[in-house]
Image 1 (cartoon, rainbow over the protein chains, first blue to last red):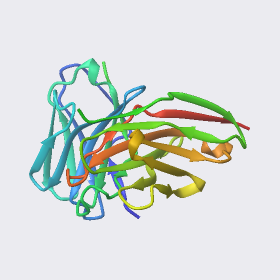
Image 2 (image 1 turned 180 degrees about the vertical axis):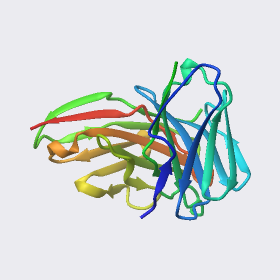
Image 3 (image 1 turned 60 degrees about the vertical axis):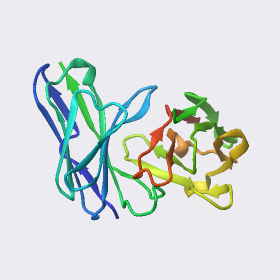
Length: 115
Length: 114
């Protein structure tokens, strides 16, 4: 079974802090994704990566950056946290070889509260 | 612009009732379509997917979906729901060879009364 783990389930930070969210997958997947999930808005893609050190902006990249130094690890960084970044953050990974037809596997999510 | 929309935000059904959740997409090309489900306290997981062939696809737990190209729709169905189907359901779409990037709908919360 594919396993996607996220470093924290719950996180409380103060406005202006730098926040790191870590995601690790154990199935040698090429693609990794960061989404935020908000009620009534579904999942919105922040960034994705299709290879080590490669990244592409998703639909809502403002205020976020990412890092992928190793294939299994994909980090989301909030450079200066703001209250409107309070949300549930989901990481996902997929094989990356089937023209976009492959399943994405999701982690448990990190619920971030910015005060 | 590419988009995926779900019509129903919250659906309440009694056990044994039939279910149909609507999903419409707007894409200009070959599209891959998915339904994901999030049970309370669990990870998002795949229910079913369509990318070519038979437009009626079957997934886990008795769910199925029909791809109707002329209506740009990919509705999810189940003939008889159970209390354990209580969950949030997400439709998602992506273009072929776009690196697996998906656009998700807003989600539909399904509550099944025992």
